[in-house]
Length: 178
Image (cartoon, rainbow, N blue to C red; front, top):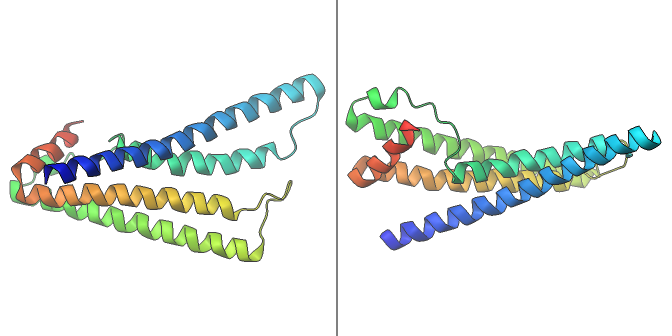
């Protein structure tokens, strides 16, 4: 069982890191685009055509690929001030229920984003200035949401295990002190 947990911890870390790298690359691209746009405006009075649209698309990737990384690094803020005050048998059950519900919400978000992306692809929807297709960004967003849900599912399983195992209960409770 310890080997499985270690393998899953590694998988979650690698998935989160992969998403974080994509987010960071896009953030760097946004920074370079904005800096170049500002310089072109100042020096040549010629902004980059569609720069604003490109930044909008990149921002979607930065946020929705950054979220799985943040979750994998335990950098997501949890409001848990009530949990330690609950009776011990209830506290981890309540946390597990919240984790499972969160997983379901992000699965629904991912599914809705995927379906809308496919709809936009079918319609051929593009941005107004430089005709960037919207659908690839929806697919990347859906991927990020599904990876978030997968990491959340793993956290949910650990939360359920905390109901029955003191070892997992201590691990989960340590996160609440943050």
